[in-house]
Image 1: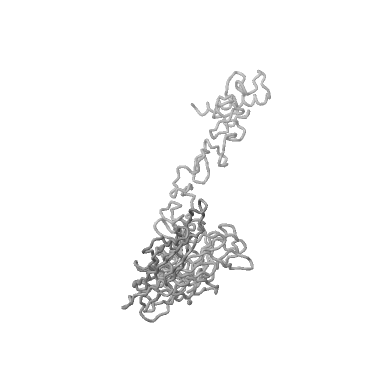
Image 2: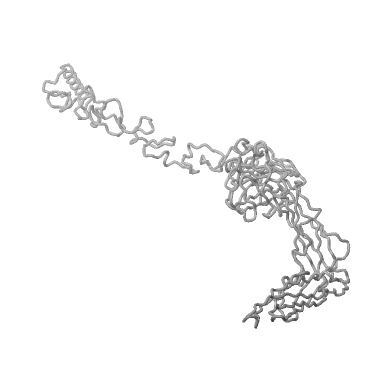
Length: 600
């Protein structure tokens, strides 16, 4: 087509458009919105290039797109379909960027651009924290947060190869300003520094028994439980110890706490130190707590308490609901100062219930937090008075006068014969006054004799003090002489009853007769005490009833006979006395007891 013809056609179209516009009305009833607004009257569409029935003058904002014209429903397609100057109005725009979700594209910006409920989907998240690498900043956590292939870059200030956060394989650097301090470095002794970052300061010298657990308050009364719980430790060495890094733990319930402080915590040689779950003096029952721990509970019934430094168990104590350890409420369990050792404080018998209070004005619970414990028991000391060989039949002077109470309370004494040779007749009853301070005892057989002394202060009994004495058989002995005393005669009568006007008489038996026999005149030529007496009937016509056959003096009863009127009926009994000295030598003697019954 020639340029001339093109220009001609454009000229005609423009003239027709101008004519219609000037007319200002649509005389054929067409309002420009139905069948061809802008028509040239012949039904043509020369003023509506996209054929959607709308001309530009009538408001078509895109006369090259038949899906765009005034009044149509808006589609979510990134176009202004209804020519109101807005695109995709009424459709969701989650990220608020002016682009509807349906046509928006997800970018790495921390927003849900496409409205699908996910943020930055499709972008890498190396550390799996839900934040895409493109947005993440590197933090000190042992993870590659920003996905650059490096872990915790920028967090090793001293350049020693260890960061302050650590990693899956390395512990954190505890001092990132000193390149000589890092996990695994050599610990330098006595520099008050944790060189190897294990939480312990100068730990190279820790040994079992360096610290002792000496007092435990697991069931307070003056403060609510567990706010009033605490325990006391004691430095059992001759050097100062640093507590930083020491672990408080329990095998029973898994409690665990490592002592930590920005300051160095020291406990001097021979000093006590109190650790508690609550350091508030006003709510813990007035306890002077020096260090407050967490995550450790002291159970009332059964539990244990362990102190550790690295793999070293420094000390441990367990309690058992009163089976062996004390089980108090409102008072501590305390270790007697006589048993301050890592082995003796394992025994429940080394512990007792505190009887004194640490603050009499405040009327606190019983205990002595931070101070030397009270002594649990008085001290019994059993001894004897002799510098020579001890023989059978020697009178041994036992001595308990060295016993004492450590709180100066009055004490009483109680001796027992714990063991004696198998053939000995001796028992505790043979200790002459066993409740006196210094009783006596005479052994009757050679061999080991063990005595125990316990003292009592009115509250607590002492541990038994054992005295072992080896008795040697005396190389000589003479048998003792028994003396049963003189023969004895007694008589009695019975009044007979006449029968048949005196032709005969009916006589009853006389009453029984009592005799007293006494071996007091028996003796031992060696001067030994007689340790055994025995009375036995060995003959006679009457039965003798012996009240106490093994006594030195006793009563013997003979039954009365039945006489005839005007006659006498006699009965008698022979008794044999056997005496024994402490060497086992014996002597015998006999006595005749006669009883005559007269009828009248």
